[in-house]
Length: 109
Image (cartoon, rainbow, N blue to C red; front, top):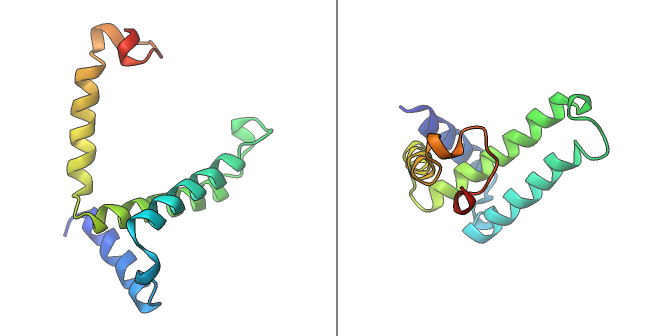
């Protein structure tokens, strides 16, 4: 079993034991992702990055990953495949010879 499939199965087991699938429609999973991302940002608010509580960062990242995996599962997406496809697309948009060391957006290169 692939690691991503193992993660999804563990999430589904946890969710289904609590009968939470009714709350896990794509819209609400996307909203949860945004909310958890905001909670991650809050850990860095008004402080230096190195002063953020790394245990809390880890917890918020786990929440973000969990909702992202559940959303991918709802659409039948293969997590590894969609990430590798996106890296390929970004490689085409940001060729090394133009993008290396630059923070410019692809249409500004």
